[in-house]
Length: 337
Image 1 (tube, one colour):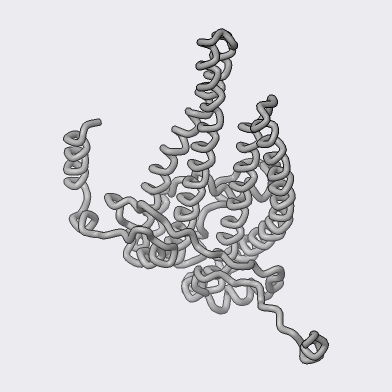
Image 2 (image 1 turned 90 degrees about the horizontal axis):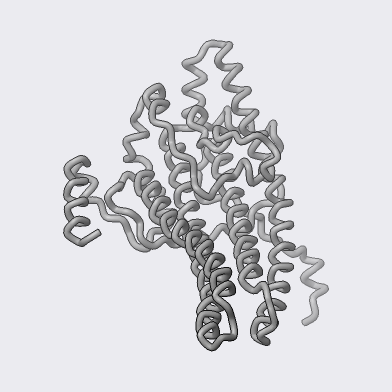
């Protein structure tokens, strides 16, 4: 598409969006903290609940937390990844939506880097084989086979590049700047997640006592609806706690997988450099896939903790972190001087 057509497309788009959209500036790079400040002015926060239901949110491209937690062993249930619209304020629901979209962009970028590197790995042997075919060392069949493999990863790379644009568009909508797509992001520092959380009953009580929006909703409800709301809160918190338990185990598995992939990649690279037949491309792909899944797990843990914060009437960000270990006086005395 020419620059003239691009410019015309932007001008046409401006005709269909409020002027405030065009005036908004998005920091570059933008941090998660900055992105969350856009939530309060989002038009979705002003919609009546029945109106909001007519405009369901799109599912994330990469951050599929429910299926990731249960390893796709359960039936797909997109509703389990919704941002608690009936249990937290519209503003907090929008903040959770922004977090999810922000993480999705980071994952899209990681995926694009992986596929770009993978494409280069497959292109090099293809290019060498083409050159050596001219010297009659390889046949057209050899070139055709490598080219077919290269075209597969080339398509994957193109899809990842498109996903970068798509996830940024969804983030731009989440922060109410649909014509100003975030360019660069500052990935958040998640810190160390807590190993232990309050018990289910304690979290339910805190949510019912401290979540002002939920308290108002319960005050307007009759006895039967209050009972249903209480059950919804308990069920949601239970599912988040179970998900967090699974993710702790999943993260340990991910670390073990990455260590194995690192060793395997090193061996494949050595064979490749010695011009011995090697599955270097596949080894790189598997290593990058393992690292991407580790990042997904960390972001899904962060989303679950943010949801627990919102249910309890706390800010969705920052997240709770593991308490720093403190030394006892006796332990300090035993240290060598």
